[in-house]
Image (cartoon, rainbow, N blue to C red; front, side, top):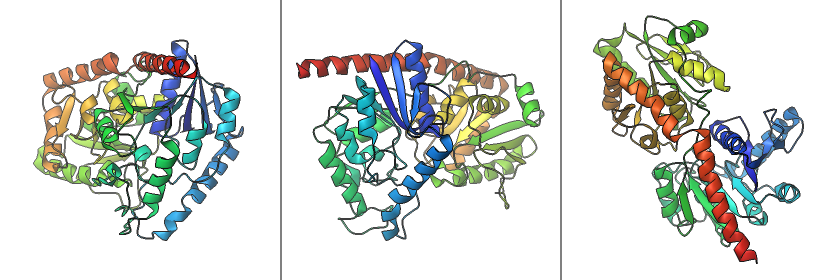
Length: 423
């Protein structure tokens, strides 16, 4: 079987890393896997970039994104959240035809990479792995409690639009028209996203499977904490609370503002001298946020080795997102034996077992988030059990091979049905 994964990048953002890990997992079980990406960043010969030069590729990708977003200028008050229109023509279908795969696996295809209408021209069985909600909305990637995707979008609150026939309705209509006869199977990374897809107007009649992301448990594994801290120049005599994400402090969905308040509460409850904060995914701003604790900013980290080192240096990882699918950072931290604290939302309960490998706080209850941090850190014997279960969870459910075999089984089943239909 020849599979082709389509993703905007290969090792750039979290969704791209997740797609690339599946690509690696499929190869590890001898599946002929290739990736077709907008801008190649790895040196993997099985990854094909639309431009051979990474510099040119990034420039072209940047231009496409800029042009793709131009219609948003008609909505000057829109929330500046990630919003993808995907209206630019592309050459993907001809490239896919040349590669002639048996099955196509779509991943995160935004930033102007793949036009909505192109998907219907691929002429192969398609499995679409959803890394967020974009595939079944009118352009947003997270709905922020809006339920218009269950009908036909329009009057989009993120656009601050009161018109039913607005940009979100236009995007939704294009999807509805282009995809109505597709041979399409949906893979959701979490139970939460599967429920959202099943309730959407675009995907409610499609097959939806749940297959979580994976990671290389040999790369992400516990590293001696003392050594990790020494290499990162972090204090040895403090308990370290780690927070991190792409655009960690600027993306409101990541809940940095909620974490800040929770930590300020924590600093007033006798923990000021015991704890320090570590943040990756952001550099120290000119006017750093006040947490009530000494804070270390590590900047943006992209390679697995650096990330595993940072997780291993911490005592606890906290992700205070208000909406989240299946956060790579939580999975990576667990693999390094680090208990995690998050709100009980999205895909968090798929990874964090409450009071077994971490703590799930009541959604947006800042005091409970602070209490969860205390609960994880305050008892050494309990902490060792949490840490052991964190690592065990990833070994049992989130390895590259487990994920790859689930996909292989799905691909085989879909291909068998497709070949029967073609006879």
